[in-house]
Image (cartoon, rainbow, N blue to C red; front, side, top):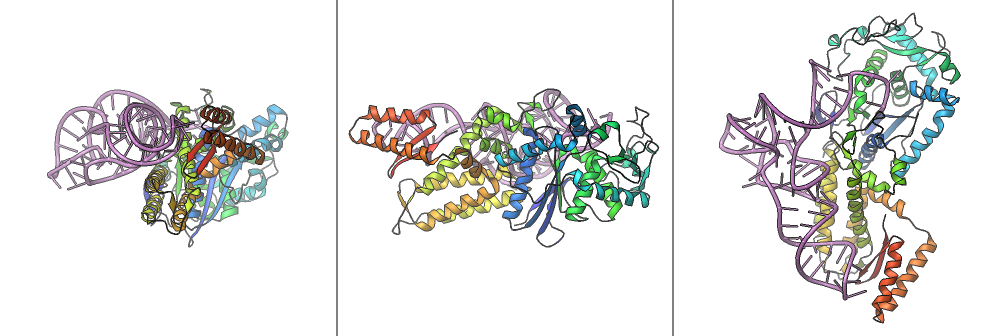
Length: 477
RNA sequence: GGCGCCGUGGCCAAGUGGUAAGGCAGAGGACUGCAAAUCCUUUAUCCCCGGUUCGAAUCCGGGCGGCGCCUCCA
């Protein structure tokens, strides 16, 4: 089995080969922390997580860096409005992002660099480009990257740089760029920048880093000249990542990124999510509406990352039920009576086939839809094999449990669902007590009383399931 | 205008040359004191037209429809 990934630069799916053995260096463009991340952002971050989890699952040694942009026009503007420094203004949003990430089961990554922590390295990087003739200081005090100095410009987006309409975007005369296509590496500080604590000394005077610069410098500092994967939302292809390539390769003279992966933007209830439409929604708002984190996670990974995905509340309901099926299955398996004398079941073959399909799906450019199909096929087939037999061998049961856990190490659905359904000990005791009371009533044939107890539990979100081995219960969202 | 994507059953969504995974919802049945869970059965020829091919949802052309990027938005 070989992992194949789609590379934006080649526009084709090809074998994934890390630069060095089975070590994988990944850099992902995280959020700009000027506001709460919305559900669309999390489609992207959840994909990052799938990549992270699957590579580790497949045996790679992964070093994963996710940046948080804390210096840019938006954070500075936000800081200015609130009278805070950029550091103070962005802190709560950074924390909220990490909290929402945990809620959705996104694994921690190895490093979360912020631009403010790398100013010195950025200044050095810009100096390097100026010294080598790839950048120049303009009269407006900014330092620009000279696109004319980088022959490969446009290779990511697949455009010929000479085709870029020179002057097409120069509607203001405020720039002193030599070429309209050039982009800022370092911007001269404004009064607003100074007030927000977003200005630093440099050989070119007080200023702050340009947005594109941040990722190049931080990835270089943390992961070296060449990355195995660079991930981001599709909007970043141009100009952000194109510019990163230009400045990075101009500076290091090494290939910057071996594989570019970009996630398609999410639609919300059939429309593009945008601030102007006012239709973006955050994870915490969905939780307030009563939706379950596992449902959100499921819907966001239910479509391939390069396909359209229309996020809807109707879909969330369907996802909740799909996740519930997995929980029910897990509960059934773990509650099985084990017996040495249990008859042979076709379980090993079913499970092996499921795992093979699962891996093959994920290998095909992280095809999560197909992978979910493999998982649910296993659920149905094992359920069918189990029907009619109340006992199973320990080996068969363990095989299923391990396969389920294994696939969930990548998908993270059960993991998140369990976390949201954990209950306190005293609640457990109370439920157990009620169930026993109901059993007594049933034994006496007093079904009215028994049903009344069951209704009482249902109201609390506890659903009962009577089986041959007694009554199981579960918490439903 | 430039570049690109998509259109699969009621809804969501895989499959990208050999006669359509999976999830949700619905219907019928089995099981159950009744439920729940589970199982079984059941619902598609893949937007339209033309072409290539022994054979296409899958390739090519045209049409209709939806969408994205080209603005420091993931």
